[in-house]
Image (cartoon, rainbow, N blue to C red):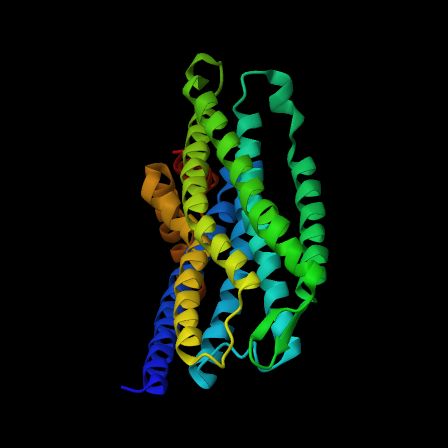
Length: 339
């Protein structure tokens, strides 16, 4: 068997792998993040919760990343690759958008963990330190920083004839190797998220001793457990891809070596698949490890979305309900939300 036939076979397998995993992850990602947004926006219980606000931003960022992924998947189905090696503008734009989304998602996880630590702390002053308004300011400032940083770093990408879309600036290569991937996109968010989620979990274990309303106590326990499991998944998924990116930035594989290039494409597809799980897994973690969240999802889908859909699509009964029946329905809805 010739070298060209082996490399062609590996490239074909890598392309098919990228296509199938891309479509599967797009389906799960869009469904999961849309359901997350529905639950955290629809339920009154979450509207004034700072951690829910950060999770909402994370879900929006994940959805934008899913739209980028479907674009790459469609290009792969047409051209056999993601076309970043064909256009310098697309090469830069792809990495700029991906870095903005990744940066936002990673640090919204950190913000969620930090917020839960302050929210569940037994010191009253620390609990009052973080407000929803302050959280919105922090989120806005960080997203602006992520956009500026990603544009600056993404502009250093360029198309090389034999290497494809790579960082062509030596300073950017050194920055990415020694600071961006190992520290800013790796060690720093991992340490922040892990440390504060563990401290928040420790706070929640002592929450029974505090005089708090039962609804607030249940919410703190629910959010803390969800954030802790999200952080564990985040740490497990971000480390392999960051190590891979550091290696490929410093040792890009030339297309003039067919087998090595084909194997590199296959390894790239596998690591991209592992990395992309980070942008779809939050909803499934929440629904798997939180029975209360499962009830809330069921309530939103059945009592809110289904009822509205029936109202829009079916004929509306013009009878006016008595005031007492409306009050009874509102009280039932609030009791379900607080479950």
